[in-house]
Length: 135
Image (cartoon, rainbow, N blue to C red; front, side, top):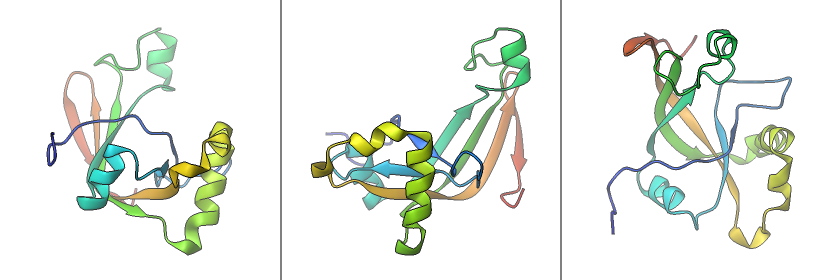
């Protein structure tokens, strides 16, 4: 009913195994999810991450979604993980989210990742800085 309209969804993500973060977001998804069906037609996406573990917010007992806490927004193209990267994606996701191993196999799970094109860091009530993808 809202085909072609953007909307948000919560997906588990991992940027690598605990001791090998890459900065590349990996997702374990099913084509039965409307979000994924949409991404397979139009792969443009954005991902916003709150400063959940930052020192300022934790030290001052401030909700990570409070505007005083930083948030990072990544935009880019969502793509299916190529066969040569699937084992790494599996280790990345399953090491951080072991419960996904028990998800029903009938849902045709597969791995996607975001090819990041732009990065923005927002802090303190709207101050936004662009960050080079290479950084």
